[in-house]
Figure 1 (cartoon, rainbow, N blue to C red):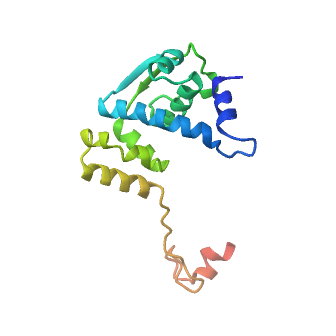
Figure 2 (spheres, one colour):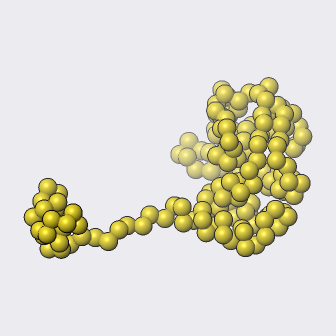
Figure 3 (tube, one colour):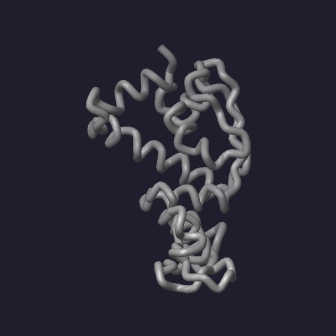
Length: 166
């Protein structure tokens, strides 16, 4: 069983629900790593899974969970099931992308960290938050009524032209 599979088995029940005790232990550790990365403006974090686990006082499964969480914000994503204790990890951090992913995942405890003040001012964070939220908004065009003129410009009613085959 891979480290990732082992983490998933611990963190989620067979019904797919979160196991609160596991998450209550993991989330403060995850937050400390982000506080360090953001506070120290770390653009690159490297080491094996085992080295990073020891460095941040986590289990190897928890480091794999951390990599899984930041994976979408990385330029090159990791195949989670392939990670072992000896796997070399190189996290290249793009702060703007990371902030937007935190907003997308609704990780309020992370995108509201005070350490962000040293990277982006409040206006920049507000702008990125709006951009991220708007990127997921679907805007429908105006609906064409059956008796409206056809938008193709034929002069016919929509129902007798392009809408006839619908």
